[in-house]
Image (tube, rainbow, N blue to C red; front, side, top):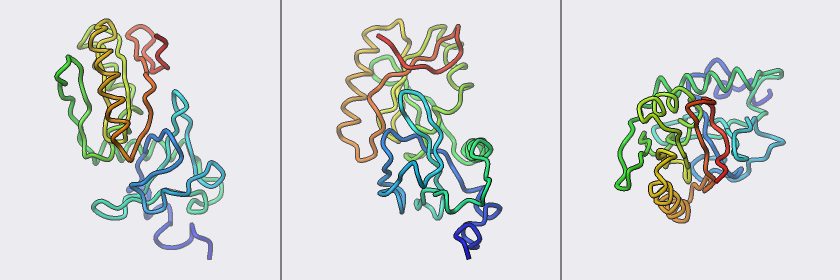
Length: 193
């Protein structure tokens, strides 16, 4: 019996429990099998700034397992899997936007999926519409996503400082790279200072 034929990996049995996780490195301390992730054995979606999106299966209240290729049936469409994982995230994980002390904002969710919200263009569109400004965004850790209006140079500097500090203190680091969401282009791109 192949792994994807086992009851605990049959796609129809797990697809409602799969979520996207944004990663900077192919390692994930929060997942059962997250120490040995490679592009050869794990379905991965390339993201901005060299970031990658992996998929995890929620196995318990706070237990996750990285989805590996051998857990998927032959010919599984990774793009369709990505959309399913994003739908699951929207359905199951609430998020709020909070103010930071330096005039920026943070996405708050459940401490595991904050960086996953980078996947949703419509969130950033709502924010640029409300702030009437482009956004500088950083996701230093899996549980930290920060953003500020791009025209507020002091806030951008504080975001960078805050983000680097979070990155250095975390076991679940993602990146100190900056991203930009512009009101004109309406897409997330690498931030060029």
